[in-house]
Length: 88
Image (cartoon, rainbow, N blue to C red; front, side, top):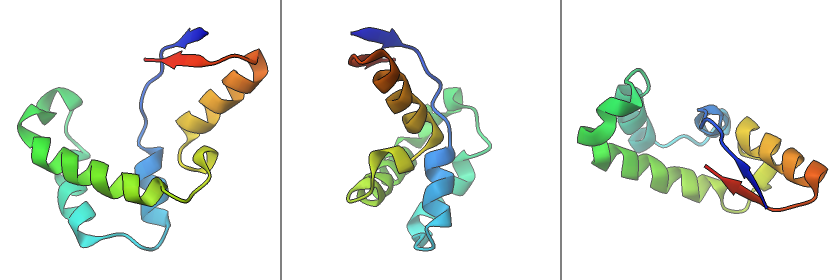
């Protein structure tokens, strides 16, 4: 098993918005957060949970490597080294 430290990007959110089926609830939750630093999100747990729920529903039934650039890169690393990754 290899350990990988990776940044979490917003490409999964961008891909969701490009899907053409964006819920108004997502936009109401995402728009106020997108310009804030993650360190300021402690007071925004409800919004974060709504976004998480929507993105999980979006992810179901899709190929995992199409969800985000970060996930696609991790899969490539896993395949290249032919081992499981422990991701942080």
